[in-house]
Amino acid sequence: MSTRELLTKASDLLAELSSTPSFQDRRELLDVLFDALLFIDSTGQLYAFEDYRKHLVSDDPPRVLAAFDTREAAEVWLNEHPEPPSSAYVLVADQYHHLIFIREQNHRRLFPHPVLEHYLGARMREGLPPPVASFSTQAEATTWFQAQVAPPLQAVIEIAGAPHLAVWHPHLNHRSVHPFSLAVRVEAP
Image 1: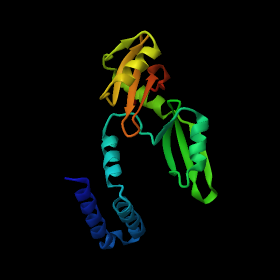
Image 2 (image 1 turned 180 degrees about the vertical axis):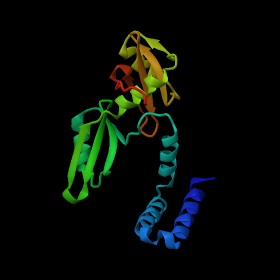
Image 3 (image 1 turned 30 degrees about the horizontal axis):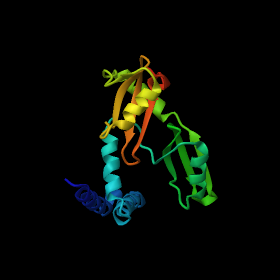
């Protein structure tokens, strides 16, 4: 079933629930859900929503909105953006940062966030696949990754004997390499 069909069926379900007496006390919550579905469709976000849903069920690294070479470039973008997102991850020098914008106060903030470290930790707990390539230096790995015409969304590579995750962010056409040594070590429940 297409995403458009799913949104239509979800809207129908919300309309049906809102007319049910047992849901009358939660009418405002149902209205918010219905409005969110209408927002996705009426603002042309259907494909972005579809991509987001695919990402949720994937095993891909956390999604980023943008990538910047320096913190200064990220700050300039954030401060000059007329309406930045309320919350998103961005890469700054290939490190994950969380972006926060509070419209009512025009509060804009960008700070490092360990979401990737947790992601890498989860991958390590699951067990890493064999590396697809091995390199002596970071420069060799970067050159190889940049030369890939159709890079994988993610691949384990080895640099100087240590595992790294090579990540391609296709919506940004940005490639980054992250050492698994950054992984947060958390015991599985």
